[in-house]
Length: 334
Picture (cartoon, rainbow, N blue to C red):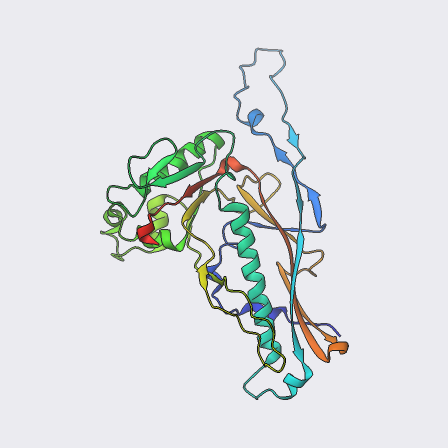
């Protein structure tokens, strides 16, 4: 019998605020695994076509186009942990294997979703838009076109750099970006930046926090994901050993030396504008927000299987609405 364990999986080994995938772009629940969405082409909407109307004459009029070529395709991701009968019968009272297995497979899903987020949104060449300027690169000295002085260096101007790109994006799209994702090393490099310190030194707090950074940059939210993952490989299973252990523990931040400035709508909708959407196949997941966890019997293994499954696709919607800052801090800040 399948037993839903999704509610247990709310708690994880890493705090939820350390992950960005569920915070930066809206989640869109979908019925079908794959489908199309519509994009209203902006040229007709932003052109001034209204003319004075003379008596007994027609009004000016035109229309707009719809692009239905973009598609999504939600990919199911699954992982399981088998609770063997022998181990269950031998567990101490302080151990709850069903709970621990649920937390384990949930943690795996969070890591997978976050790493897919990084692949889809956090690199150069993604936010190219219809004009140059959406890829910016931090340099150690004498910045040129599409470059800026790295934010942990003396004389750098992160507030001006971000606000300038905000203004350029607003001019191109009609919407100013309102969320800024910065990697943990970048956040650390910003703490002692003279421009930042000068901006907040008279604040009530007297020190830099992310709410104050959001005010300084002119965005609704600054997101600093601090989730880590182990890049070490798993050691082969040894017969008789009670554990599967990693051959090495080599932790690394999932997010690295970059920042992403983007626009997201207050709520998704048919006419909403956004840099990105995360499509979740809830028609398959039984109505769960993005993850389903269940337990079922594996009689041939003499074990109970605890399995997690998600099904999602992450898409850029309007690439003009994102600006990517590559290497915003120097190697000294890493």
